[in-house]
Length: 301
Image 1 (cartoon, one colour):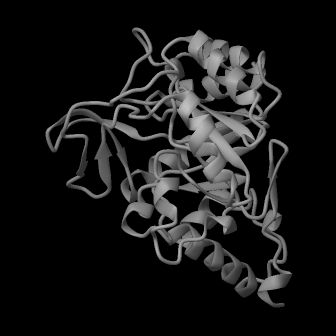
Image 2 (tube, one colour):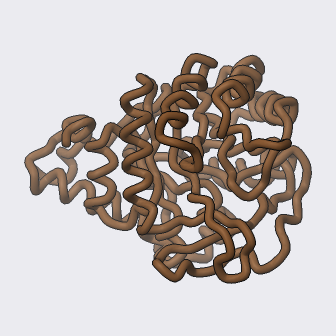
């Protein structure tokens, strides 16, 4: 069996992908893609935009990023971006040129903002799906983050679902109890989510001069695995897993746990070509283990 005989194609919430690999939101700048030698996002399964908000945001004060003493990194970017209109007009078309599904990540501070952004995105042909970020640990909508309460998470999902026919992927936070993560997942599924992505970064305090930030990288993989396992037991819709992915073995672990897709974030800062390398590595892994279709791995421990 040669590499061409290995089928890595997956379908997530109706989104057809040539493989399960994609970048995590906020960890890929399409503007820089053409300047990185050897980088070819056209081989990705999908591409995710940086989180966009309804209006322009300048983000948090410095420092906003640092290394964590136990590995990985901490960020407190604060959703710096030029707003949804700029993203849809300028960023999304640049992403779409690579010919793979474009998933738009939206972050709102009110339910109405989520609804307005979803409606705008629904009119743009290059947007394949929405990732609804209710889990950012750095910016709070009101007194409690949307992703920390099942009822509020469901309300956001219903609002987005009501104005778009695009696939809706809801991104969950790990910064809740084990009991609550399953309840939140069930709530968004019942409210109309087509898929779930997790985990977002893990909240930490007082690291590198950052009062409160999100921890990412290899040390959070065990947390991601536990949260994904609980969510997989709670819902039937597809899961896109992320959190500390750096090796082919990590990718396989997530797929065996029941993930239909796998996103890579922090590791791409040190190696912008890592997603391409992991796709090649996944093919080789399948060849070495006599696997002709990636679906043979899903859900096998």
